[in-house]
Length: 177
Image (tube, rainbow, N blue to C red; front, side, top):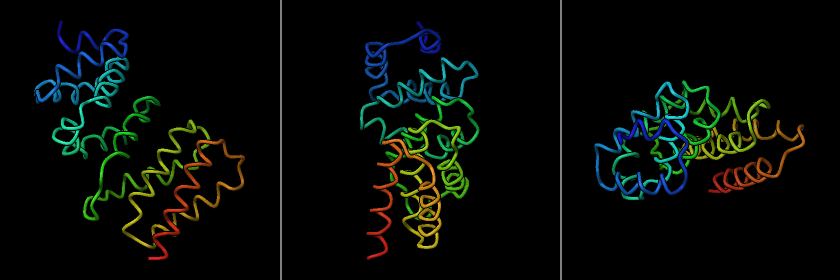
């Protein structure tokens, strides 16, 4: 069965493990998953991203990290909550150099940290990623702290409160350096 056909159906952890084994070192399979993460069929794109999240670390480093811009582009245009969360999680787990910071991604994260319509987990991922992206620029750290301060006015759920607390710790450590 072709990978796309397999991803059209509901898949389970066992299916993901099988697909990850198929992808093990196989650039063609991984490229297909990356193409399918942008599929118009919501289930196919969700399942493809779910599989990408479970790739072996070596495949992630070799095949996914170099496609960081592709993931960012997909994140910025998706309106699917599940895809957005998975893309943010993938990007959160990547390293960024100072010259790789995309302002559109940073703006996206900063705007949506306080988006009350978004799920707590997605907002928390925006906090984590924004903190990572701001670390190179003190003025951006100040802006992020201001945005996080605005959140004091809302009753924060535990996941969001934890993400905010960890971000503030990191930002204060950066100030001390």
